[in-house]
Image 1: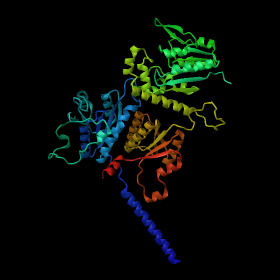
Image 2: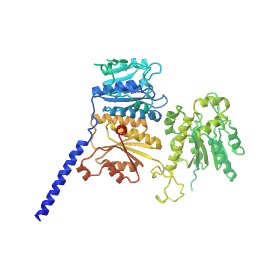
Image 3: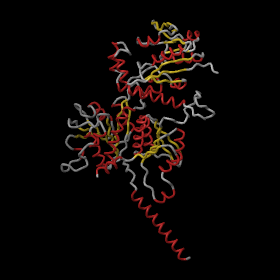
Amino acid sequence: MNVVLIAVIVILAVAVVGLVWAGAHDRGKRPAPQATSSRRILFPFVAGALSQRALDAALRLARVEGATLVPVFLARVSLDLPLDSALPRQCSMAMPLLEAVEQRATEAGIPVDSRIVRGRNRRHALRQAIAEENFDRIVIAASAQGSPGFDPDDVAWLLENAPGEIVVLRPSAKDQPADSAGAVLGRKESPFRPRRARRGAHPVSRAGETAASR
Amino acid sequence: MTNHGHHKIFLGMAAGVGKTYQMLREGQAEAENGRDVVIGYLEPHGRLETLAQAEGLETVPRRRVTYRDSVLEEMDLPAIIRRQPELALIDELAHTNAPGLEHPKRYEDVDDVLAAGIDVFSTVNVQHLETLNDQVAELTGIRVRETVPDAVIGAADEVVLIDITPQSLIERLVAGKVYAAERVPAALNNFFKVENLAALREVALRQVAEEVESKRIPANVDGGRPGDERLIDTAAPAAVGERLLALVEPNPRSQRVVRRAWRSAQRLGAELDVLWVADHDPNAEEQEQLGALRQLASVLGAHLLIEHGDDVAHVAQRVAQDRGTTYVLIGTPEPRGALRRLTKPALPDRLLAMLPGVDLRIVADRTKRVKGDST
């Protein structure tokens, strides 16, 4: 009888230890919740004009600063629609792009918090985004001769009106618009892999980029 | 026995699909069967096939109305009611009447005709439906000013979709069967594009499917008989329509769930509900995320629901039953400890058990799939 009792106690003890171990093991395996950073980098873009270089720069900055990337798709609402209209056609373009940006950011360990902001035109949507979002920095590309990005008037308006730091990437004919998720994800070279980096070069101060601060 | 007339609406995706033609054809068939049929109002747009189809049917003459020094021709509502036919064919339900007539809108005139016990066949294009007006304007870039409340369609006894392919409609347009030759190039450059027509066709098909669904009567509900023509409201159990429910929490990861759910909803032509089961008052960060989810839901045309409760599965079950959900999407559940696994089944298991007949999809993190593929 005593032997049976001892055996039961041993089995129960083993079971309890096993459960505790399993619990601890699971806790160890559990992914840490996505780190939320108080620093936020706004990355506005429109359909068909997502600058690869600007996205790379925004990702580099976010990684270096431990910031959250906030990709903002600027949707245009025509004047004959209410400003709060559903925009299925534009969203069908925005969704794959936002997914792809999020995927690249997540791969790089950068937290992402995406937005779609509506406005009557690009600048109005920008204004809305600036008014509604908390951010420390904005990264945009200036456009020229077909390169993706914001035209000089929008850039000037942003520099004049937006709070925080604004990083404007100089237009370059080499910059390809990423108008599909595949284009966003299709880079063979990751901006996070070491590559002929100039000694001491800050990510923001590489050739072809300018930083403007207010 | 009711005195109210029977209303049949011929719905099309655009001008030229053949709504008026089909209405006249069915009117002719009714006349041949011995019914007293009149044309209450016809707008043939000079289409020879349409005019030919109207031959032999009595037409109630239009009345002339003077407005701002212009003479307008409008449907003569009092004359139709005085004439008391069994069936009146009335074109262009969305038409706005000249000021000073009995009603501002033709669908209101039709109400009077029906109330007089006269059956009505009428026509309307899908972009005129009030709740679809914004959607169609966004899809096509063109907004129509004359709208019909959806309730008019909902109250109709029959809605018949006149459907042809966008290519066929464009061929009809090019052949001069829709508009006069001088209007064809402008029409082709503006409204009559394959992508516009395809989008409108989809909206029209969906609208009619929803009408069919909302009017469907189960064989044995409240004594309803098979074949019973009595209408029931939209509380009818879903038959063909899909409805998606995405379960979210106020954090950025939930946006992925909403985006994937929306894309699935688009493919299925379904409505999307987004649900947060709130077991606590949201803090400032969660408030911000709720704002972002609200904004996302709004731009996607989805419905954000916030329900209070301690048990996500129970609340989700109630909401899914209330809203006729056919498809539930959730984010990847976080790993659970052994003790919790023993004491409480995982959310997906509970949802599957509590929502029989409802599909469940777990939205994965695609980043992990890419990493796995590349190694």
